[in-house]
Image (cartoon, rainbow, N blue to C red; front, side, top):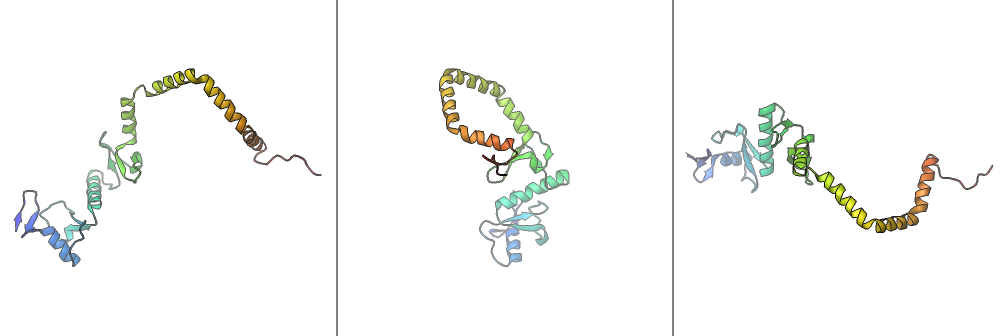
Length: 173
């Protein structure tokens, strides 16, 4: 038995925490499985200090929640890498896969404004320049679209005016 420079204990050619976890499981660990030390002491390989994680993502999530619990007492908070404040997960954007982005919405907005300070003015200037160059074409397309869609638009307006009741052409008494 020897201790490596990174703190893990080796038994022969295997890590001791893996050997202990496999013994508790009764079979070899699955390929992607990781073993997590609850107290984060790599030399403490007691069975009650080890958690078998299904993959690295789950293992990283345990570390993140433990860090949050130590810092705030609440494992559900996340720290913004920009302002370093601990916030609820609703304060962060999510990627399409559902994972949180590590900058809070407030800091993201500040960063966006700092990167593009005159963005709105530039967009308005561009739109004005485009409209002045293509005004005739835009008016013609708008007129053409309206003439094609005039009846459905007027019908919707009449329905709204009659509180959702369709207008009857003739009433029978």
